[in-house]
Image 1 (cartoon, rainbow, N blue to C red):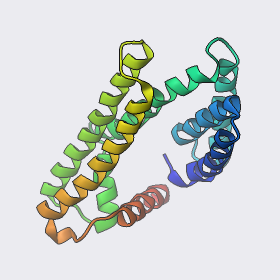
Image 2 (cartoon, rainbow, N blue to C red):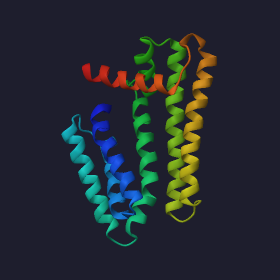
Image 3 (tube, helix red, strand yellow):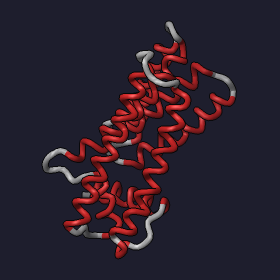
Length: 201
């Protein structure tokens, strides 16, 4: 899954989504949010294919939001979809013969990965997968009427994701001091580099 075509579609959609939310356009917001997720999970490798997937997702969400429950039902389902997508994005790289996602990012950053670091990044990829699956289970319980309110869950999901991300960077710096300081900018550059290298390969 290439990152660049997804960003080319998802970034404009994000801006439109913010504008629609600010303008109180609930139906448009639901469609744009679904389109944003569609862009990020599209199997297509180019901008046109990603755009087509986003358009189909947006159209489906708009049709759903026009029925019983309205846009609120779409918004209630989006956290579940988002967490499942992220769990799939990480988890699919744990299959036999595949390189774990965070191992690939680390290799793009440092050029080589020691056996100890490979074990660490594989476990880290698994932990992120389980993290998103755990929140997906909570989202599903909420949709079924047996879980906590969606607003606090979404806020907790975001805050714990950020805490996990930043906390892991601190742990990695202690366990592997030779890697040097790890920060958000360096991580994003590694992700971009891995995407470019994968496409070139």
